[in-house]
Length: 110
Length: 113
Image (cartoon, rainbow over all chains, first blue to last red; front, side, top):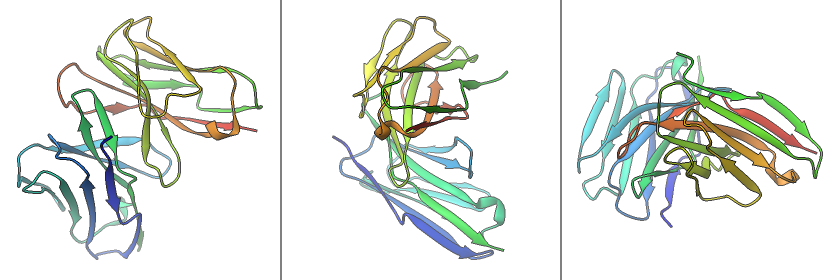
């Protein structure tokens, strides 16, 4: 079945540094979603990308969807302690099931 | 609105015991999902439902059963718990239609000894 791979598994940065996580699928994705899970919390939806080559921004977060719709990335500029958590990408298998990547856990040294 | 709620928040079972996890949502969502989360493995889909009275298997359904007797509730059952089922369980729901965002509950931390 469809697999969604996410790297790196862990990332530790100094506050103010940038952070990027990458998501790759074994098959072409119809669209991709990104979620954030704070420590001890539950996943919360951030954004969905649909179009090939699409780029969306949310303040310091930039999301990209690859031209071939098989990869995606999340970039955070100038990290803050509030960015701590695990970031998941997820691709749809059919129209009813999301397949999640393993997640990238971000920790920040203030 | 409470959103998605899960009961209980924590539970410790002995091998072979059974239990039911309850998920409830007040957003009138058609679709509901049960995931398990293990370190380094992300979220894996156990079972899901696209409407009252319907259920379907996900990626890791073995050892679990589900029921959706009411639209707002989705129950996950473990008939004979095993240590491999130690995990954090999340319920999620979404509205009908393609590719909608999922709303997650706070999770249930289950330990099987």
